Image 1 (cartoon, one colour):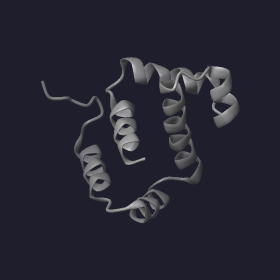
Image 2 (cartoon, rainbow, N blue to C red; image 1 turned 60 degrees about the horizontal axis):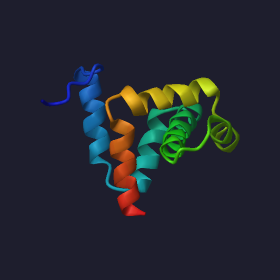
Image 3 (cartoon, rainbow, N blue to C red; image 1 turned 90 degrees about the horizontal axis):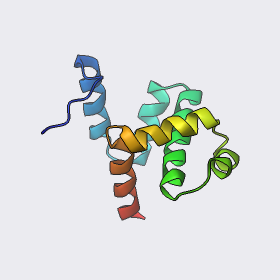
Length: 99
């Protein structure tokens, strides 16, 4: 069965297609700096690091100390890792292949 996103609409389709078209890290920085506020980028980045640390079985306390994330954010990311659309895991798996 194909994945059907809960947030799908014409605008989110356009955003996902735009992200796929990014060629390299510089393109990504340029796009996200124009698209998002600095706090939004930092928040998204923080959540990705939290997901990576949760997968490494780090404790909430250590994750909070290392990332500055609140326990609510860590819990939300953990829920997404466990019950979400598998987006974090798919991205982190691909990132591990390139390290």
